[in-house]
Length: 168
Ligand code: SF4
Ligand code: SF4
Image: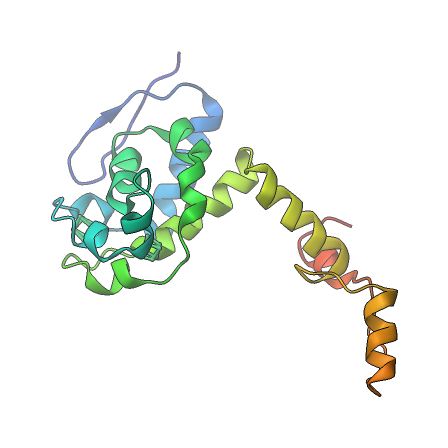
């Protein structure tokens, strides 16, 4: 097991499981969205402001921040509750410490896709958007309905998104 240290505010020593996790740590702590998360003093304003936390017991924005500060990287990036965040920004606007919680969660999602395994539903959506350019792809049936209404035909495939994310 490889060990590393993190001087993020509290001089907390983190035990890192492997090089991949160490790389994630550096990437995450280097991003501007993660700056200041060590200032979290657990007031739970974010939790009580979050509409998802009121509906889903397993989701709590402060839990994600604490997991990050405790170095629970593997669990954090594989946590399926990460994907419940709707990016509504209620937490971020109300945090008394000015922590960019919603932006930080978006960074976590991006890292989870980049380095880990996103949930199957997210993976499937990504593939559909890559191929069709839309979450709900159009087909010939849609174009027939459009033609009946006098609307122009729309493309049923899209290569632009795939090129943008380097999938093609
Ligand atoms: S509102 Fe800010 S300071 Fe309070 S618990 Fe949430 S992240 Fe921490
Ligand atoms: S941005 Fe995400 S974590 Fe923050 S309040 Fe909205 S749903 Fe909750």
